[in-house]
Image (cartoon, rainbow, N blue to C red; front, side, top):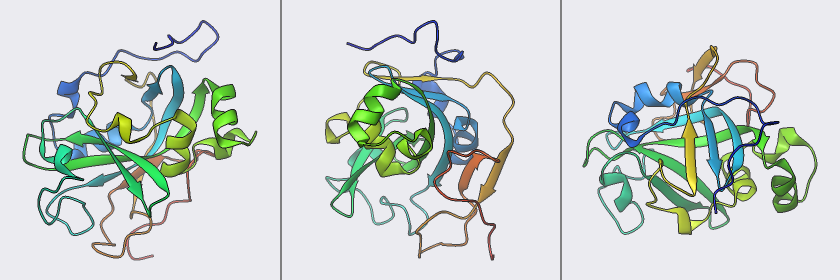
Length: 203
């Protein structure tokens, strides 16, 4: 059962519906910074994301649909979960019209809800390290392949709009060798919960 945020949790905004994702991935991605993401009531504030589109070779969808990436080619507003390097799960939010195969990778969160559960799953105490990377984030929130193709506006997943002004910074994506100079990584400037500091294209 999905746990509702309790009275001691930080304020969250209005729920994000699937229609939110029916736009360019480059509009959606920066707007997700500052939003709240919960899975079974555990999660926090999104502080870092990356955009991917089928027209560039770093995207899983670049060479067309496969059993692994088929959810990316479906309608927007669904989760795309994949295994990275055979070790870590990573979660993406599918964007744009059906067939476009664009998605936003959720790279880092500021933990705000269910922190004790995150600490148990991650086996550490420091809040800054609980969700400071896409694999860490999925482990902390309990995200696995079982969440692949689930809607983003129905249990166990809940998303809420940001409630404050966010200074969003853009930079090149992390660990990318193909299309490495595209400034498609977005984050909350100065957040101590980022996976890595930002650098600009060409630096």
